[in-house]
Length: 466
Image (cartoon, rainbow, N blue to C red; front, side, top):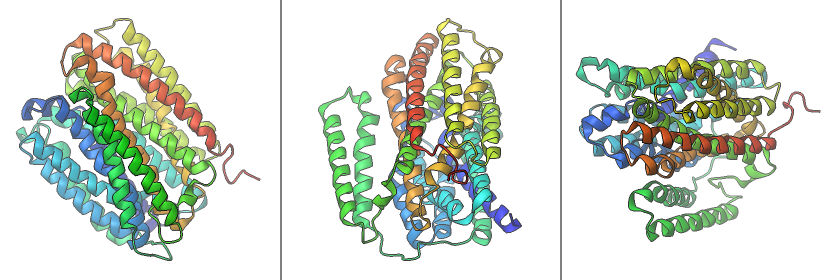
């Protein structure tokens, strides 16, 4: 791999790293943000949902705009928006401004992130492509847990008396580096036969996602009134109208080329990615609250628990990256089985009534949870997108990333039913432990469904198939 290609790969992975870090960096800082801004349980949910929802809404559009207008151009525009929004997060005085700035971060990510997978897909070939996707999976896995680690360490350090604010301000120099290096080293790529974007499709897809995610997020807070179910029904109806519109637009630059769903590889992989997002949105937010409220850990010690998880993820992702796709779906399916077994062991520890469970005591199951998850992300992305035509790379990448972020938004909304319904925002240790034990059952079920969906992926790597 040439030096310029290596630098381009580094810049693309750094852009992906910023996205996932900012999805999870608030987790260990939530109690500090709650204390300093007076945010309630609803505001805490919206600090994550307010980020994930604009991402889920805009990823399909962002991916298609990259196909039509230039993937490097959209990546750089999105990075400018994201970096500016990070600065606004860092200087926000109250929860309302902070949630608004988080939403603006999500808009930037929706433009940035589809270009990462799409550019990897069209730029690299053969073993270089497998290695690039392996590194992508490693970055994705590590960032999921590095975010809470950074959040805990930076909050505990209280740099310059800024408490949690440096978790956002650190994005400013990193974002500037991505802009400068990306402009020089990332090759531009577009669809060969670019046409006008499907504005109607963009509006319908955004409306459908809002009408589905918003009531799921707010329903518990308002005790599930009728308007919640009315909005959900309207969202499903809008989704049907969107699909019908796409069907009519197939020969005229649709937002979503329905040819992507021929066969089962891409739709199966995308559905598995949705389950992945759901379990991440549900598990990571509730885990940090369990560690700090259920076990009385400080942000620093909670961050150390995430370090244990990241060690396991790094090991699992390293194995996935070095496999070069040889084991096809068997590798991520094995990772999921390891994660389910480790989750069960962790649940047994909690159910045994260990209110004083220590980091040392939970080391084995937590490291194994990370190890199993680390074996999933890279191979899942590689196999899901392997047979997508280059002209539709942005649209496919947008859909695949939408599945992840929509899953995270839905998973975060699910915390209202699965976790906050028991704790009601209380810091009571017993309530938080009981609620988290319920979460583990849900996460285990999502993992099992994700494992089953992976039977849609190839049994053999493409270079092994006859």
